[in-house]
Amino acid sequence: MKTNFLLIALIMIAHLSIAQNKKTFYDFTATTIDGKPYPLSQLKGKKVLVVNTASKCGNTPQYADLEDLYKTYGGDKFIIIGFPENNFMNQEPGTNSEIKEFCTKNYGVTFPMMSKISVKGKDMDPIYQWLTTKAENGVMDAPVTWNFQKFMIDENGNLVGTVPPKEKPKCDKIVNWITGKQ
Image 1 (tube, rainbow, N blue to C red):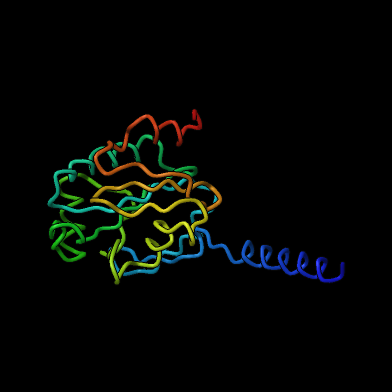
Image 2 (tube, rainbow, N blue to C red):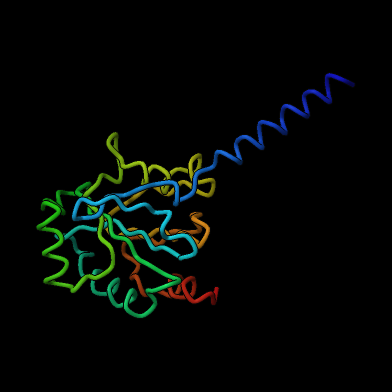
């Protein structure tokens, strides 16, 4: 009887420890495209759409839809964060300053853009390790399959879903999630 009680107590302590160690999106700090630290904890209370981007991709015109989505819904309750990456067929070869200029000049991007990172492979950024790995985010495995994959983060910093790269940013799934019409 004592052995069973001890075993149950140890299991409960282990589960409690795992729950307390679960990271959220807010536990990370990114670097802006201008090289400044960007603590994601400053986004508490907002829904966040995280998108890996590239300037020379068939999906690049999604920048316009992302900007429109941001202008329509962005503010106190919603934000978009772009993470340029060059993981797919060298479709983002530019420097951070070149990427910023491209996004501003061609698409009028005003939502926050971060420094270029890796979203897969051995040099994957820790934010994307969390986004793509169930063992880290507690929700799902969601490997990045191409440029412009979208990750939805709730107001508490938890991953709640993904949208494939080809799906437009203004699709029903994203708009309904932002507006709470799910």
